[in-house]
Amino acid sequence: MSSILRKILQEHVQTPFSPCLNPARRLSRTRTNFRWVSSNRTHLCSESVWTGLPLGAAFTFCIVSVETRVQIQESVRGKDVFVIQTVSKDVNTTIMEMLIMVYACRTSCARSITGVLPYFPYSKQCKMRKRGSIVSKLMASMMCKAGLTHLITMDLHQKEIQGFFNIPVDNLRASPFLLQYIQEEIPDYRNAVIVAKSPASAKRAQSFAERLRLGIAVIHGEAQDAESDQVDGRHSPPTVKTTGAIHPSMEIPLLIPKEKPPISVVGDVGGRIAIIVDDIIDDVDSFVAAAETLKERGAYKIFVMATHGLLSCEAPRFIEESAIDEVVVTNTIPHELQKLQCPKIKTVDISMILSEAIRRIHNGESMSYLFRNIGVDD
Image (cartoon, rainbow, N blue to C red; front, side, top):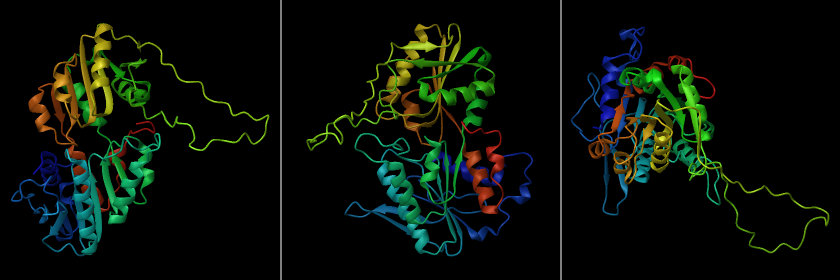
């Protein structure tokens, strides 16, 4: 069983999210109306059970033609089913496993099917770029068609992705856990400055800075945004030669090409701890470049904090060889192997908030407690 699933199951029974919660109110409905389902990629140890409620018996396997097949080996008719899926290295197979599990529960007459997807895959492809497509919208459509009635996720790359669904979506936040880590694990954090590695992430940095009562710095310049979501990119000429304008005097004005200024840091980081915040760490080149820039400007210690640690390819090696002192990510994505390769990578457990969200949804309670003090820009 993956670490996040094991902790969610433990927290769901043993520890309430808030001390004000009455333990007797946990799972107030009959427990026989509740079922967990997970794939082999999440449920690696089939004999592990949740105290008081066993994990649903679902078996995922590949047949000879390399197709994924799911067998749910107990009745889910009339039950509230929660399907948890953590994204593995093979993201496409992970998605198909979840869709097939959801559809299997739907055709087995489950009363409700809630997907628990801590990291929403393809969330970075939420805008039209070049002649591509908005893949996040496709993902949302497939999940709804498969039979999901509710989705729990965390820190979507863009909050507007919620609008792609025609079912309720609870976009939980990991920032309270990351803020707590800063306050408890960085002794001299009062001498820190929150850094946005590009202007696009300035709002997130501002939110952290205001809550910690710290200053903010923004890195701006040509070394940033190598894969910017802001660039449309459709520069090719039309395939058919135009015969002329609609009117001889009409001329369509064109935008002036962008020229990024030399890299600079807006804000003082000299003699300070620099804490770079973002939502996803995948290709770490931009983070490494930002750390080098901050070192040159006088920062004596550099932390990188993000919700989702994809850490693809050679990311652990690049981090180990860089000026970054510590990378802090949550366990929305399994990264045990990357931690063995790079001791600088630390993990913050967020299973508690997922567990509490599941409890509230199953009991029909309000979710507003989990979103208190969260602003529009958070």
